[in-house]
Length: 276
Image (cartoon, rainbow, N blue to C red):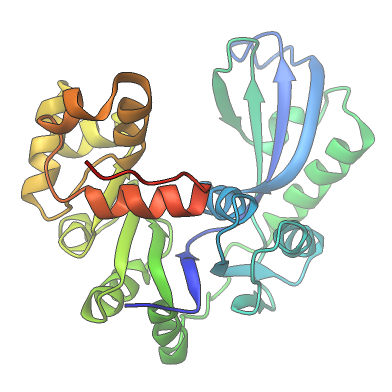
C-alpha cells in the first residue's frame, strides 16, 4: 500500500546521556572522558538515520511536558522527521537514560544516582537532576493511543516498531490488514509470539533472539523466528552479508522474499538497481 511516508515508527523516545569512560566495570570511580546528550531510543535513532538518507519519516511516540521532551522534538525536527503525531502528555516524564561507554565501545546503562557524587560537566549534571526529579512520578497513568492514531500507521509503506509500547501489537495488526509492511526491533513483549505473527521483518539482537528462542546458534535462532511468521528475521545482517560477500553466495542462506526490501533500501539510498 502506498502512503504519505516511507517509514512510520511507533515506540519509545528518550534522552540519552552517553558518557565515555575508561572502564564500565568500576562504578565507584566514574571518570568522564567525553560526553554527549542526544535523543535516544533504537527505533527513534533509525528514524533519524532514514530521514538523513532521504526517506519521508514520521513518529508516533509519547513524551512529557518537560525539558527532555522538548529536546526530543527539536532533534526530530532538526533532521526532518515529522512530529505531528507526537503525544505530549501532562504528568508523564520523558525518560532520561545514562549510558557509560568504554574505549572498546562496550556500553553499560546506569541509574542517575550512580553519578550524583561524580565530577560532571554542567549539562550532564543538569540531566542527572532532571532524572532524579522524574522519579517522583511513579504512579503516572499513561494515556493509550486512540483509534485515529492507529489509522495513521497505514499512511506509511513500512511501520517500524519496538517492544516498549503496549500498543505495538494493535498497530502491527492494523498495518498488516492494510498491506503495510512491518519491521520489529525485537525485545521482550508480553505477547511477543502473537506480535511476531504480524511482523514482516524482525531485527533482534543476538541476545534477544537467544533469550526468546533458547538457541545459541544464529541459524537455529533464525529458523525458530521464521516459523513464527517474519519473512526475514534479521534484515540488517542480510544487507551486511550482501555488501560484504556478494548476493549469489548468500541467496541460499536467506529465507523469504527479500528482493522487495532490498529494492526499497536501494531506492532510499540512491543505489542503481541492476536486475540480471
